[in-house]
Length: 108
Image 1 (cartoon, rainbow, N blue to C red):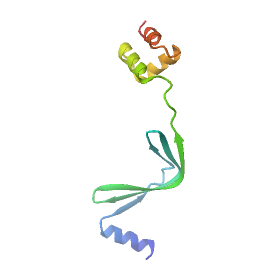
Image 2 (image 1 turned 120 degrees about the vertical axis):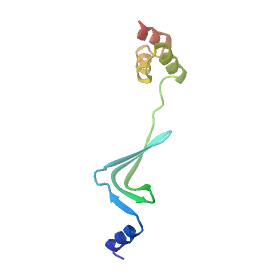
Image 3 (image 1 turned 90 degrees about the horizontal axis):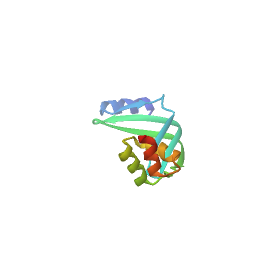
Image 4 (image 1 turned 90 degrees about the vertical axis):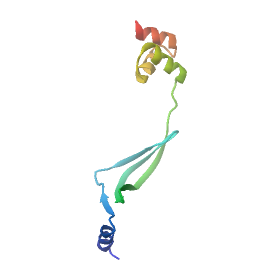
């Protein structure tokens, strides 16, 4: 069968295939590492109301860096100073990891 006949048969069965030509990179976020597919070629297949994706490309894995500050310290600064996680981490960095000093810096 040639590709044209295959596309016609898929259309008769209600299966739609779309090339996503503007996608150049796909990233899957994992718990400990991210999976990055460079030079990606992505095809979206729609059948019975569900969308599935076929991804081709060059896979590389990137290990996530662990947070340099204790999670409890970050939460303490967030709660006591009423700031976002990002602000709490910035404050801890400026206070050399000392939560009390970070809270004082944020609230004064």
